[in-house]
Length: 334
Image (tube, rainbow, N blue to C red; front, side, top):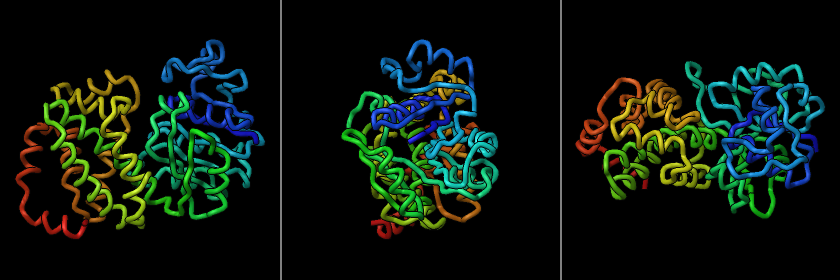
């Protein structure tokens, strides 16, 4: 099957390798022709060091690689999804299946990534979300990994499952694209927060408290917006939250550590050297929670640290001193 992966970051590259292993005709597109040329020559992506790019993987900076593609994977940073969707629209066919693997919520509009793609490409094709606990570094090394293919159209979700699934990359299907995408975006905010806790010198008890209560917040907002509770307790929800909040592979977690150690938000993101999606998601989540009138104290505090200069230690004291009414929320969550 002819397949194109849009976005030559670590995750897009890792997914391109999975598709190559499964025998598909795969092209990896980079927005930078210079980077595309470098990868084609060295057969390596600097964001996925030590992983050989096979000769069967085509690499280009030209969008005509989309011609006749049956499956297109959208893997740019969340802030670039709209521009990417607008660029690719002339090349797509109505029967093309689009897969979004970008994790975020669009600023200003509050749209999920699948909604942005549907809007920019004319609402004429199926969009599937692929998400789960999946560090690109580990998928590139073919370590056992599981993800969820989510779409209200069951056939489309299974089409993507069949394209990706193999003996090291297991895919489950779900109709709950709302829950899967919201969980993917919101867990990055929590990972940043867990990193801040680590940077402050706080340890396992604190991070377990943070992750569990943050999942309660994510679930409240997710259900309000049409997701199902089961999704947030599963692979795309709690599974992705655990892996992102506990591993140094996570850019969000690493950036949070630097912020907790006293570095500015901008300095922390520059030192990480790649897109820190949780920073952008924090503002979008804050806006959504305000609009939907959903109580999300952890996400609100993360927004205040990242965008309003509030001190992280003050935020921890504020959260720990919240009124006892939160105990009622715990009972309803359990």
